[in-house]
Image (tube, rainbow, N blue to C red; front, top):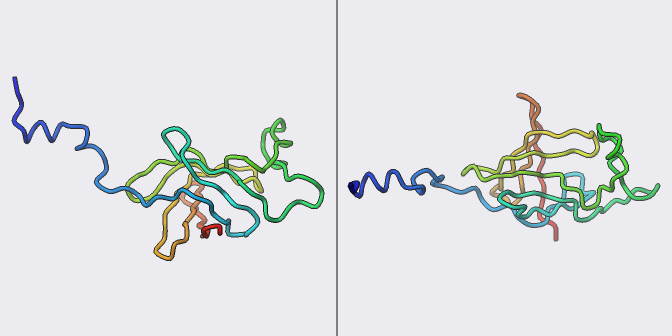
Length: 138
């Protein structure tokens, strides 16, 4: 049995994909504190962001993940660490998780391009959120 074209189109996978895509966020970004550059790019089917450069080095040696709740991870270097993981396009923005090495905590997060070219980076715990603006690294 053949379905009418209008029904076949309605049941096609394209009918279930978002009509809009979030603005691309890949590239290198200067954090709000201006102490590091995060490089955002593809990681499998999602986007992730790694600390690509530390602009304010620790005078006591390489920066490590000393506040991580897992004692086995407290000596791992911050440089190269993935702090943005699993970001997926929702059509409006990108949703995933962000890790804050200063606090040793992971938060729900969204990324969204702003009209001024900055990247809005929001981290949330329950209903409480904090938003930062990252700028393009030059």
